[in-house]
Image (tube, rainbow, N blue to C red; front, top):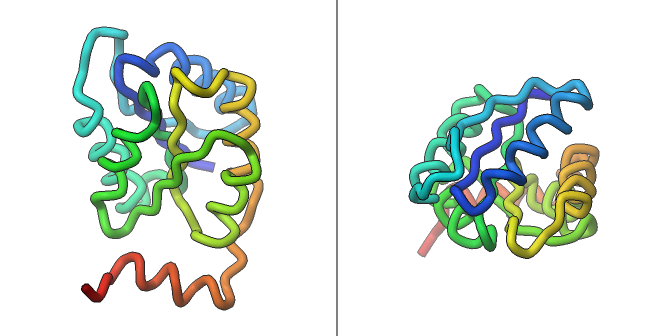
Length: 145
């Protein structure tokens, strides 16, 4: 699978570890930065990740920051991307099954590397259920306010 990954400075080390793990699993991984642990602004990296997933360059995305909150908000600004902030495998699986999430967000200060790997594995291994869920997912890209 083609997977894009990005982070802010707080999650730089976790991003590096997860990138290598995903490559070992045989995935094609696009590291969208940053390239060092120097301070950066998470919206820049969230927007970049959202664009790559939305245009189909990557099939899935992994977004990381200190808490996972800020970068997930940034990613979700794109109407064609559904980013789920998760902290354990069940929510990662349900995000795919019910919400057709195409990006997963994790907080490096809150989630250890082993748990992050378990979440990503559940996210990548779970198909979208479709059916009644499709109508709801369609509404996410075209809100009626």
